[in-house]
Length: 267
Image (cartoon, rainbow, N blue to C red):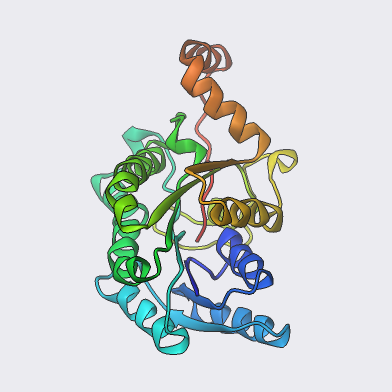
């Protein structure tokens, strides 16, 4: 059984479909229960097994209830995908401490809540914890300091607990997407979705969510340490690691204009 938080849209929903095609039973967890139930009905119609569990990763106990719902239905948990999150954007001087707290509560504490809730069942199955990071967890760009900080944090968490959990047979896979088609860039700094808002990411850079999901599912099956999704994402991670001076020069040369375009993620 696979638990996916943030399964109501974007990468989360695409991952649910991709795991289902591989024969997995799904627990679909997110705040928007109507969307989860529609996705569960779609999967059922295609002959797959799925249950919807209303879940808010910013609330204590919510992910535990989703895990319990899955164990009740399927008696096991093999993969837990900590995918739920959103992006706070804007220059540092325009943001408040509450903006940063809200970002960390969702993107960092939400990952921790998912890991704590899933770990006992994952230990029992020697399963896999999948953590949704971002290219922004490798390269922090102007205008998304809060988002990048949260993704650097979960990358550090993934790298540390990978070694802690390995003796128990639990693997940790970090997923670092670049621009993927999703609703994240239509969500404001308070987590409210605006469906009519334009996507600031260039269309030619946005990878379809179903393609990204197939790449991620393969990486999970191989229990890879990390998978960077999208070609531009791989390039940016390489530059951040090997040519940070060139990256800095590029920012200075181009000039910075505030824009709302968090690197990746899902809601």
